Image (tube, rainbow, N blue to C red):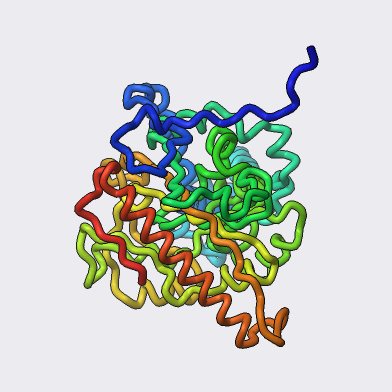
Length: 424
């Protein structure tokens, strides 16, 4: 008897959780708390210090290497002058006492100790200079930043990601609401069809978007693979930049995202609130600790691209994304600079005041897919026409309503019944 060619149906976990509201399906149940072992925690703490803290130690390390290179180069130059003009053992050479005129007056044949010091300092300066140049060139050119390299290394299957997903209690749910998705568009397959996946909120560090597309375990039985759209500022995080390139990351500029939507298959993931959304939470004045925020009210770029390329949008709310780190409220002009230069100028902290995230369960809830409205009118196909702008607004309103719906329907069983979502 020939084996069946039909793919196995994904098992629903709804019947195992009778406390859930009707229409909510658990796709990936939360792992037991004890699933995160001591080894997992060590991996998470170490990689968080390396990756999240990379702007501090990487650029701090470059500055340190540069200063040491200058120091040894200067000492080598000083001893080189002595190499030519003096053998006076009593002469002390350092940054404070060095005087070219002094050595001119006391020029004598070369001393062996001076020769050895000159050779040692010159060698050290050469090594440091070579290391510094290599690090900077690799950081800028990045020949290793290629999807094929990531595939060869099997980056999506690393044991490291299991540790992280256990640490955050990775959970995925689907909120069908009162209307089944199949009755809206039976041909849409969330794992393979062209689509935009919109993850709300961004969080201080975009763990929600990262765990949805990097580990194979994160997307295999949920929404399928896609390319993440990331801010240009991620280039300042050396290891983050490398991981993003291995996933085929797309720069958040409109032209780059539009190009990605034209490629095959056009499947991208985006956090529409972006860096600016980081500042729209407590402790910002006007926000309460029980407020959650989604920066969507005036953001229509994602919907314009979706309409232009005829892509549906899958809304996903990530409960817990804003609680992985905490931040210090800085003066308002810092936020203005962050928005202007599209870079996260934010003072964050986690466990013990370090860039180690607090252990917070991440619960992803997918809402109903928002399909592009059908075009009507004589100016169909014209961008920025009245009909196009109306459809953009309709899609924007539908998305905001859906995000609010899945937040309100699922906050109770996450333990956030006291919280309120503000769309700003």
